[in-house]
Image 1: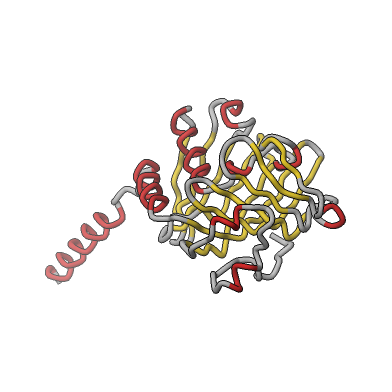
Image 2 (image 1 turned 120 degrees about the horizontal axis):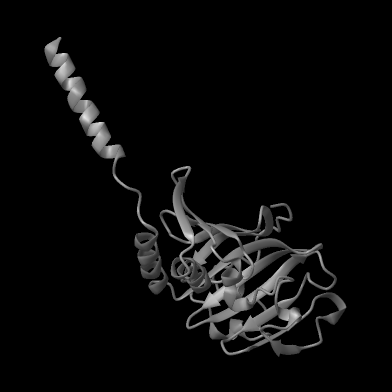
Length: 245
């Protein structure tokens, strides 16, 4: 009996040591995130987002393409606004976006400021506020402005950052950011942004394809994304469109 209790006591001590290990800090996770980003030359994903600005509501499903140094292409495959579906836009750094609207306006080329309402969400989110670098910048801004940051592990699969702003004006009026990164890949999967208690922006990233060898030509508006398949380059272009998320 005494031997049994000694073994039980030893197991309790061991289990206590295992479960007392602190979770990784936001700094540790971010440092590993930067290492992951350094290994990526290009990536694609399906980006799905809805957002509010006052009573205005916008919902989009987007094929998102990125290639370093910071070339971004977005093809809107579904949008709830007129002429959103079928729209495309390309950002190649600097302050301009080239593109076209969908439907009967698809033949009209556009070149506008990246801050122009034609190239942003209704909340003013720009092309370069939706990529991997922008997620790191958002988290770094929370650290720099002394936001309250809590790390949770969701279903054993995701790191969840809950960032509560001291001053929402430092974060585009956002009082709370909830951002999830996949624990294995460290790629963003989910984000909710709040004004007070209201979710005003909801984003999902999924179906990542990393380092497929995206050609530079993809980041010109005349290039059709369907051409990738003809060159045996994996692409999110043919994925079914999920309108409910």
